[in-house]
Structures are given as C-alpha cells and as structure tokens.
Image 1 (cartoon, rainbow, N blue to C red):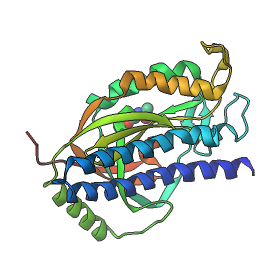
Image 2 (image 1 turned 120 degrees about the horizontal axis):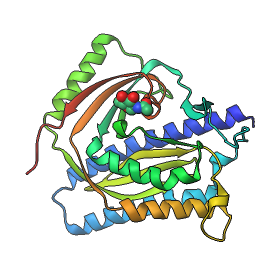
Image 3 (image 1 turned 180 degrees about the vertical axis):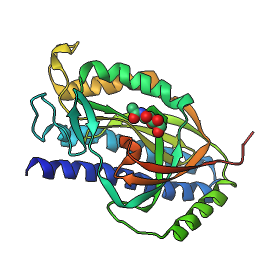
Image 4 (image 1 turned 135 degrees about the vertical axis):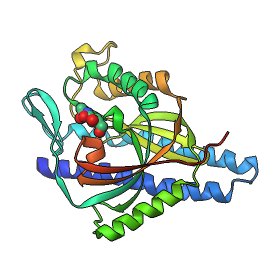
Amino acid sequence: MGRTGIFSAHSTTVALIWFTSAVLFFFLFQMALHNSTSSSDSSVSKSELRSKLYDKMERDLDEKGAVFLKGGETSQSLSLSDIFTIKDGSVTPVLKAANPPVRANVLYLSTEYSVPIFEAVKSIFDPYFDKAIWFQNSSLYHFSMFHASHHITPIPASNVEIEAEVAAVKSATEHMCRLKIVLDRVILTSTGVLLGCWQYDAAILHTSFARLLGHPKISQTLGRSSDELQLFHELVARLNKQIRGFEAAVSELWYVEEYDVLALALNGRMKVRKFPLGCYSS
Ligand SMILES: *[C@@H]1O[C@H](CO)[C@@H](O)[C@H](O)[C@H]1NC(C)=O
C-alpha cells in the first residue's frame, strides 16, 4: 500500500473514531435518561461497561502496534498523514475543502479547563516529538456528538434547512443543564491519537488532545529500554498520573459548519454558532 493509501486510511480511522464516539454517546445518553431512577446495581454495571470499553481501547496500541509509524518517513524522520505537512520547519495541516460542509454538533470545553490539559500534554510529549506531533488547539477542545452531515456520509442541506437545524439545536439547549464531567483516563490509539476519555453519569465523551505523527526521539529515553511502544506507554502513564480524575464543566454546545475537513481539529475554516446550556443545576 502506498503512502497515500495508508494516510487516507488514517484520516478515515480518525473520522470513524469520532463518528463512533458520537453514536456511543447518544446510545449511553439515552440509557442514562431511561435509567436515571434505577438502582445502583445498574450504575455499577455501566461503570464496568465503560471500564471494559476503555480497557479495550487502551489495548488497541499493543494489539495493533503503532500503525501511525508504519507509513514511511520523510527526511525529518516524520511519517505524516495526508493531513499534515512540514512548512517553515513546523507541522502544518493540509486543509481540504469539505463539500458540502460538515455540520457537527459538539460540546465545547472552555479554556478554563482545556489550557491546563494542553499544558500538561505539551510538557510531557513535546520534548520527545520534535515536530512529529500535532496538538489540538486549546481554544477548540470539543466532544463530537452528532453529525448532520459528515465527509464520509455527506448530506447536503439548503440554507433554510440549516437554519431549521440551528433552531432545533437552540431550543434543545435551552432545556439542557451544563454537564459535570470527569476525565476517566487518557489513551493512545494505534493511529496515534492521544484521546481523553471522559465520563458523565453513564455517558462517555471523548476529545483528542494530540496526534502523534512520527517516531519519538529515542535517544532521550530515560529508561534502559529503547522500545518505542514502552516509551509511549510511559508518557501516557505520566500524563494520566497528572490529569486523570480532572473535573470539568461543559456549558456550551456548538453548531459548527466545517468548510474544511476536520476544521475543528486542524484550525480550518468554519462557522460556529454557540449555545449556552441554559439550565444550571445547583
Ligand atoms: C486556535 O483557535 C483560535 C480560535 O478559533 C484561533 O483564533 C487561533 O488562531 C487558533 N490557533 C492556531 C495556532 O491556529
């Protein structure tokens, strides 16, 4: 398989992870609504379920290996996906127009919470990944919930239809309370995505913190092992030690039209409409 093929598979996988997250969120959110008065037994089994799911996601890196490293290297010993390039010595996203624009509903994590996470992620990973890492913009930390149109399954809409969707989202948010969420753990997927796995009651939420794009600078490894996988595990463990259990409140839902593929992740062009979650639980 050529580089392009591998890298397209990568971005497809990233998109699929997001898509799956959204579907899972809705499924579990529905369960939460239906079971909100049920016994503690079922909440135990739900937390077991979540734990099992996250365990499985965690094992993905060991089972599949670091797939993101297997796409060949550039002269900077980078293995970049087709969504990144090196420009003036730094990693730059390659933006591709989304036609029709992607229409996404995302929960927004404010900078009050995202900046401390961003700083922890950066301080731990940056020294080992000179340029071979892309950090999610801390002003745009988000949880993808639902796509009315996605670049994998595009569903064009007229302006009138888009405004109707916006109005529906707005009226829904007026009845939603802000969410208090806890960072259950951070995992690294085999595709190189550093993923924050959060919990909210029975529901699960995911946000990408960073994307690893190439090999770590092994020479700087502190331990005796030069094994890359072990270094990845070590860095993820260090990050977990620092931010696992982090509590945050989500108080905005965004309706986003992404004019570039993965605009929220790659600082692309987009139109954002922000809706506060109107009900404040005391
Ligand atoms: C991060 O996102 C904010 C808000 O969209 C934007 O103003 C800023 O330029 C972005 N930063 C980078 C490095 O692109």
